[in-house]
Image (cartoon, rainbow, N blue to C red; front, side, top):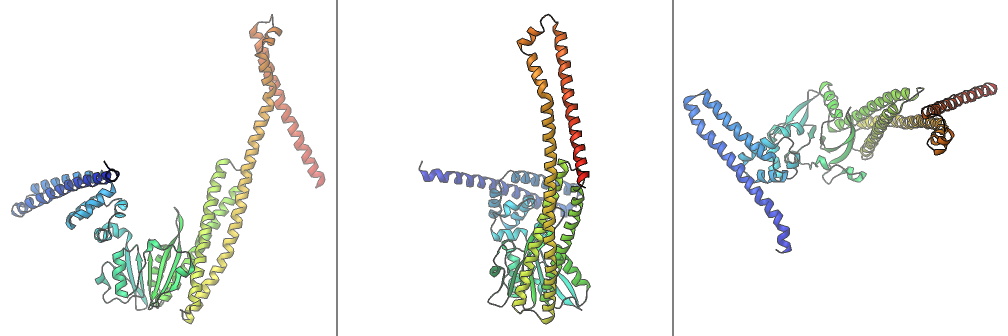
Amino acid sequence: MSEENKRLAPEALEKGLADVHLDEVRSLLSLQKRVEELVEPLLRDQDSLALDEASAEIQQQYRRELRQKLRLMPPKEVAYILEALEANERLVVWEEVKEGADPILAILSDDILEELIDDSHYRNEKTVVTAFELHAGHLRQITITRPEDLQGVHPIWVDLIAPTKKIRGWIGRRFEVDLPDPGSLTDLEASARFYVDEEGHIHLHSDFLLDTREESRNVPVALILQNDILFTIRTEELPVFRLQRARARTRPGYVTDGKDVLLDLYAADVEYSANALEDVYAELERVGRQVLRSHVTDQEATEILAAISEAEDINGRTRRNVLDTRRALSFLLRGRFLSDAQLADGREILRDIESLDGHTAFLFNKINFLMDATDSAININQNKDIKRLTILSVIFMPINVLAGMGGMSEFTMVTEGIPWPIAYSALLVGMVGIGSCMYFGLKYFEKRRLKSNRAANRRTA
């Protein structure tokens, strides 16, 4: 067999196996459909509950067999089967594999992907599109699921959470704006994150803080201003956006256009960052009381170090978050995109950020102090352990010498004529006596040293 045939043989074998499994899946789907076709007219004529239950049981049996077969296939093979099936058959198979289907979705083509998740629970869990328009001074929230929902809507804010390529496409065509993929917002250069495109649309890529009990991280968000309409695109829900929606819905006149919404999002982000710093203050205060006690065990020191590391991580992320917000606001102020009232709001937010800088710097210093104090407590515990081992080695040194003598032939010669139980009992008593003398002697000299140190301290005082 040639080298090329050897290389292609595994791929051909894989495809052959996938085709066999595809035929099996099609056979099961065909049988299931055949049962439905046979039972449906009987149900219309007889309206029998027993017949309906029997049909449902047969359907469940085919579903179980299909589910079991699909579970044993690798994701690549399942993706191949999904792409090869007809649309209605594809949806039946998708219902059986959609739990934990991320590896399969990563392989599927965009068209098949859109078709599968467009109306499924998978999309509903992650993808949310919401438009907000002004109504009597309040923001009215409108959930968008299809292009027809945008007819007659004049929003000032369109919020997209994990939008698919298809959704970004029809929203972009409706408003004549290019919406980026939220999963690729990783640019670090300011020129790539804050710019005005050829159509005059303002693009900002900012990080917003997500601080929960489980984790703390920065989530990138794309913000686009186009004709006083703000578009926000991100991968997940964020507390700052929930807060902004609640305020805008309940306070009349709170916002009037997309720029107001943008500035209020940044203001809410700074406020959220300040709350995160307050939590860090509270955590470090608790840790500080624990560190500055008279004694800290190694287990407690481990927990303290973990808490300090977590506080340092949150503080660092918060500092980066407000720095990113400052860069975005500076870009808006320099570009003269805002009205006089909005300029005043932007400068007020920048002053709030400057006040947070002092807090983050103070927290870094406090974290370093607590880290050093915890390291010192660990070193003290280690010194105590070394001291105990040293004392034990001094105590047992003469005992080891006597034990070594007891094991020599000379000891037998010295104790010749003395019964060995008496000789070795005397040796053991001598070892215990010498060890006790060494222990109490060391303890006595240690007390004398401490007393002399106290007396010297009193004299110097």
